[in-house]
Image 1 (tube, rainbow over the protein chains, first blue to last red):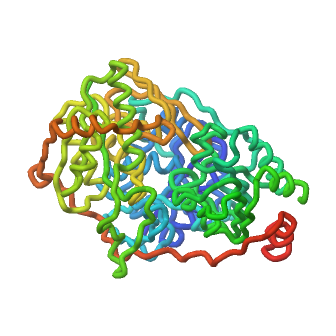
Image 2 (tube, chains in turn orange, yellow):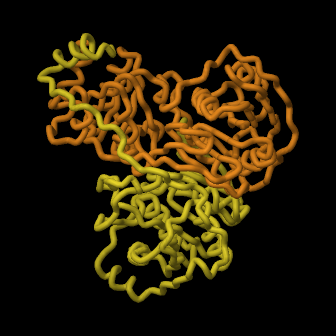
Image 3 (cartoon, rainbow over the protein chains, first blue to last red):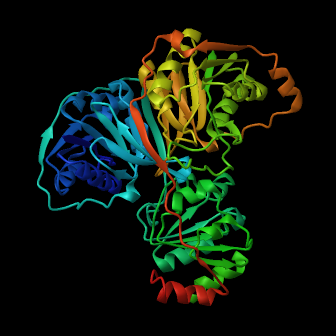
Length: 309
Length: 249
């Protein structure tokens, strides 16, 4: 067996999510190579070579890959595919955008969002917002896989000594081009890797009221998240959304404030170790998954919590 | 320009999926079914493009058996001009669906395809990207804003780090995210009108495609539930328990 893990990066750093995909590859077994497609991404290659358990790092440094456009990356992956039995990426928007395109070009299925490796051809993946777990066996010669990061520990980022190989190939398909990005505030704690997350829902009533949650989060070293309702209402930007189609997280502590607990939201946070719910509606479904529930007006409870910390 | 909107019939998002006792799948017998929410976003966007004069005709298509027609009728009631049902009782994987939709897109000569980014039943998030690959067209996934400007489209995408804007050449395949728009409600006269709109049915077998499944589902089970929690009576009690019992702060 031979695994190729597609490295997610910003041309400067390896994304933490990739380390979890490497662990999934380790569980499948066999050699692990990494593919880095980027522009002026030597620093990424250097860091990736240090990831424990990696055999070789293949680097395609080309302006066509600078902004990770799906058409260009998928073609490169297809060029490399014949050397591998498994091609993996993390199930982030990066991996979700590229991998199905590569799979279709290879005429193979994609196995999305795996949460467990049963064997080299059998995997477990959640369906129906995580309300069911399907065990699926792939008959394809090349298995294209995206990995749900919270279900695999991060591989050690240091200690490895992989060789680095510059590869040619790949070109700009000329189909799309990058224009701009509006990224979240870098000063804030990263939602996907935070140990503690404080999330707000429709009950917050406004974006301004999220300042209460930020104050609590600052004291706990926590990230701030949100339900879909809060994002749809424009209280907070989309990258804070936790749920079936947003981010799936599993912090040590998740504090849900003014969140009713729709199936779609629970799908994104019910793997958290400890869940706290603060809601004035004692019938809210969020209380069914909460370890500690507080039935209270959040506008009184949150400032009180803030003061108590 | 003609536009193809691909839709899927799924379990109603408000209904919790129940796993069959024999582990063969999720029990959909007598369950409430609807159009996948993201597909409604895709269709709504097409309707707005037609209202803006960018699109002349909206074709809504789906692959499935029996009651798939109901979902397509809903699409016609929302405002699509005509529907295509590719009929099969088999449950096809995204790759096979993409192969079918490719044929439909080419036969109809559409200039744009919009799908929902993800179906809320199998949560695969694949069909759009696969269809785009098979057509060799440009790809714009997770769209929260689409502006068509002649031979180009500017698309804002919801990505993990925030928003990204790309420009794609037409023809293109795009997938709709939730913030793209708010789908309209269907009114009763629209439902009546939809009954008279054209609905083509194509037998899957007549297309001559390899749509065999690549994955075998060995088992479907419910995840482990969480143990029941406790209701605390005050913020003080909550903080005390988080510190001393759960030891997470």
